[in-house]
Each structure stands twice: as structure tokens, then as C-alpha cells.
Length: 123
Image 1 (cartoon, rainbow, N blue to C red):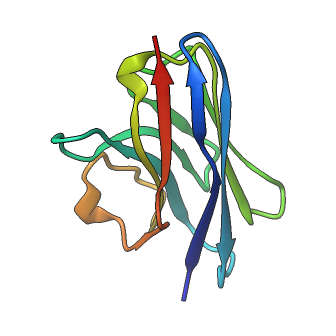
Image 2: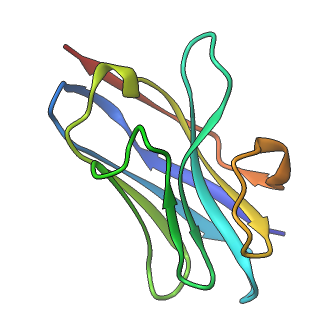
Image 3: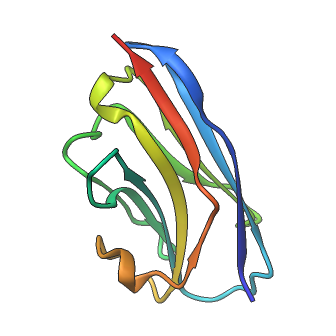
């Protein structure tokens, strides 16, 4: 059974950077998609960055060029490097896992979630 444990997050000023990490436990090598979702206050959860077992990465237009998703060679640590942060990036960030490499922006497609970590950006 896959488990995800997040770390990182915090508060920065606009233009600053943060790095989120997500440790992956109980994983056996197979086909998958791992993703970062965020949820602002009163908003729906939205996918911002995706990485699949076949090496593809996808980004929401709102973070393209500013966020970078990566996975270590052991496939046990998912990261999200966030640069040039903006106030609209504020929210709770979650890592998520689904079997099969067809990444989806629908939260209901993901079977496993981290506990979430808060990101705050002041203008």
C-alpha cells in the first residue's frame, strides 16, 4: 500500500522560492502518475504539476516556467521546486499518486494523498 508523507512549505514574500518534498512509501516499481495539487481557501483542488513513470511532465499554465516537478532515481521522493512565487499560489499543497501513467487533473482519479502542507505568499 502506497503512503505519501509531505514536508516543506512555509511563508515567503512574492518572488521568493520554496521546495516541497513528498516521501513515497510502500511503492513497488510499476506504471504510475504522481502529482502536486493545491487548494486555495474556498476553491476546488487543482492539479499544478504531474510526472509519470514514462518520464513525461505536465504543468498547469498558471505555474509553467516557475514550478518544476521531479522524482529521484529511486522513485521514492517527489519534489516540487517553486520559484517566483505569487500571492495567487497561496494554498494547501498535496502530493498524490495513481496507478497507470496517464496523468489526470481530476482529484478523484488519484488513490493516495499526502497530508498536505501550507504555502503562504505575501505581497
